[in-house]
Image 1 (cartoon, rainbow, N blue to C red):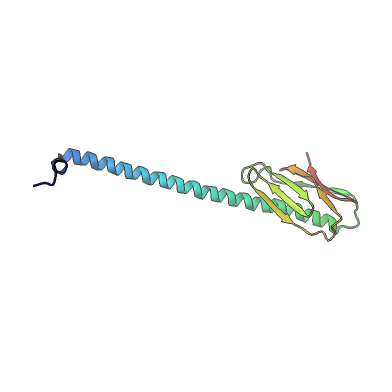
Image 2: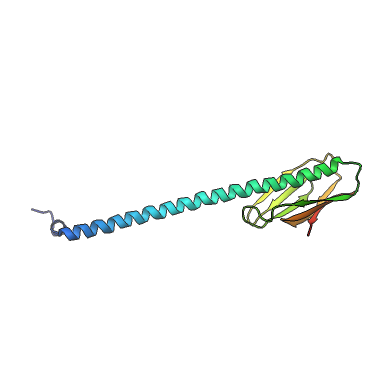
Length: 150
């Protein structure tokens, strides 16, 4: 009547055995689904953190860049400095901001963000770097230097 002994044995399982097998299978499928949801949440979270970090780095770069451009436009003042209060962290991470020949660079652990700016004069030297927080941008006849303001 049955194709083989194994099939016959499965069909003859008691109702309790069927329920136990069904419960184990349901638990396994639920566990697989839960792991999938956790992995998807982790990927979405990583994307949000990266986006936040990039946005905050752009803001820091904009503040530094606009300050240098503002200092350059004030041609009457040959020397001086401007103090900036930048965020201590971006995207929850420590960072470094730097001036380097026409660029503002913002570095985190594994990312680099840069913004170009044109001062209209290529002989102006831009150099220096500082951790987030209080920074100073110094202006002299040679150019601009960024240093920690602490």
